[in-house]
Image (cartoon, rainbow, N blue to C red; front, side, top):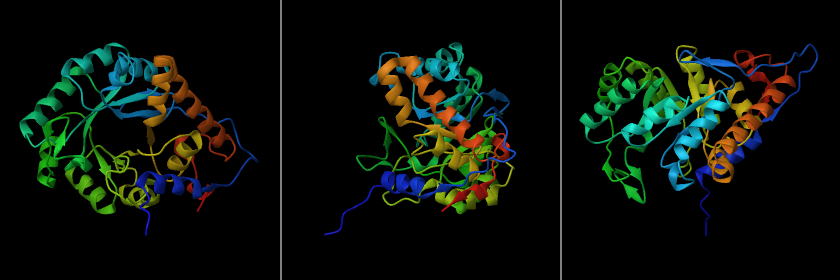
Length: 292
């Protein structure tokens, strides 16, 4: 009898299969500082698009926003009430708002407009959630969702002045379509295993990066647990990485301080990996340091 292996495990195994060579002669102290969507950041390690964190800890979304701000990075935000965005931004957080692919397109336009007025850095959509999840098919927290066409994506992009990020890209095909639509960025992700046996994001990342080039930023979501994970993603072409499970654990343990510590610890390990591989900054990590 065959045993099904989860996409999360396949992703973890692929991360661990990638080896890193050292380059210390002529190496200099590295900097993890970067700029995304006009915001100066201390690190490219960001908070993933999380939702309903009050279920983890009271005022969980606000505590996470404060932790991200203290760490000098971006918080991506998922499902939430309209007044939540303004509260998070008022706490000093730099935000990217991700909207579900709701069946009601007017609801999508309304949420994009609200996010823009609230002052987020960018907006986007996790297009891989088009059928919900197996246990909650066709729904996101009770709101029906549906697949979106290329024409739909173009209409959403035209509806906002902000960069529009397509999240859930796991193929060159969809990356090309996102480019055609005019996307301002893409997230290479399988939504933490929405499909069994999904390709690990880092395995397809180099192909997507080759296709996209430097036209738009490419982010990686799913399975980032350490600074070395972040380094491998950046070396293979990512502009930044999103951390979910580790942030939730930090939030649960110690609120804002726990979130800040997780982000800063991962960033510190990323900095060390950069030091040891002759990578002076985020823009100058040589992909050839990765062995597979």
